[in-house]
Amino acid sequence: MRRAAAFLGLPGGDRILLLEAFATLAVVRLALHLTSVDRLRSWAARMRPGTRSVDRISWAVRVASRQLSGTTCLGSALTLQRLLSTQGHASELHIGVAMQDQVFAAHAWIVCEGRILMGDDE
Image 1: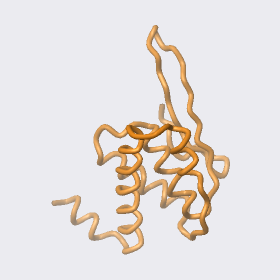
Image 2: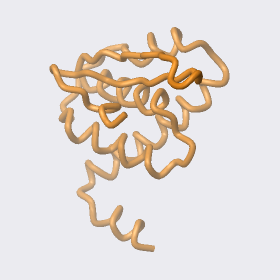
Image 3: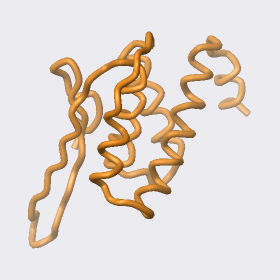
Image 4: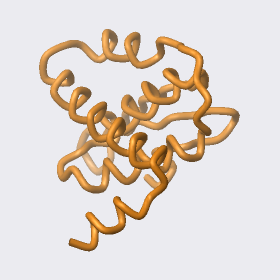
């Protein structure tokens, strides 16, 4: 109930942005099972003009990613890049891989305007 109240207490533009983040994240998570990462990267980077701020977009994707259990760093990063691109903000998706204690590890992060917006916590 508190989540609903918190959502309804947001300004209208933030509610719409948060819904867009949830929808885009759901599409990305499904698409990761149906198509290649290269194809998704191309889709996510398509630029359009927009007015939303980088910080608000990043906030919305972080909230959506925390609420949808099982979301990976790649899903979050592709979602963030897509929403940034649709608002006219260029970004770079980075994917790193390494062996840690004989186990394969991978991580994805987004850089925009010289800042790591998502993925800097790992």
